[in-house]
Length: 278
Ligand code: FES
Image 1 (cartoon, rainbow, N blue to C red):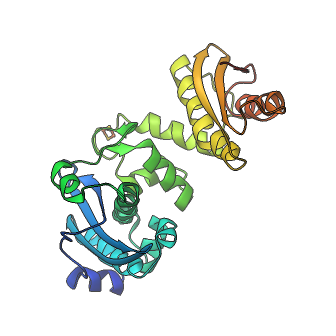
Image 2 (image 1 turned 180 degrees about the vertical axis):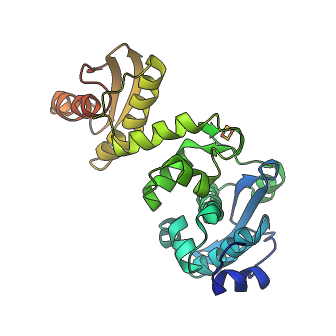
């Protein structure tokens, strides 16, 4: 028997804002019925403020409680404030969740993120009818349709360090287990654990380079209005294209060597060479 807080029990027994908004301005979906639980969230947004929110869920008591309290947390908030809500905020507001049920708070966060991504779509009714499953990329766990981005966010927001914790928070790895090595790789990449002398396979190296560029290097360059795209990898040669303010910048060589190449050498392989291509 799980040890639930009084707030969880209250929201489970008396869920708030259950249902559907026919004139929703944003709709988000997370989870999948085939994986055991799903949450659909509807938002009404006026002048940048969430004026109403409703949800429909097929899931356990924690999923109902997480969805219910999430709607209360976002009604009356600005879109910018709502964007900052994490799964940890949802779990904290509930007075905590058992570790094995943290994935319910992650599902709430994921549905909210999906809704905000779809905010501004021309025809929400259309979108609601057509989308049975959220469109996702880079699926790490095919049993539960868990994406790399979701695992990355779960690590970042909750300081997760083991595959077991990832399973508790996202369900990834909780069935056939084939994805556990990939999950471990994401954890290692996040914490830059390359100081242990691990010999990466070519495929692992490509995944890691891609991850580091996407999750570490690109966000740093974006802070100054620049960006970077990975074009190709040939052995230790990494070909990239600089974008935005980095393109044509007189310091581009310095950026490539002192930041991009150094970061990849430190985190992936000390023999990496980065070159800019047209
Ligand atoms: S692929 Fe992740 S548990 Fe099966």
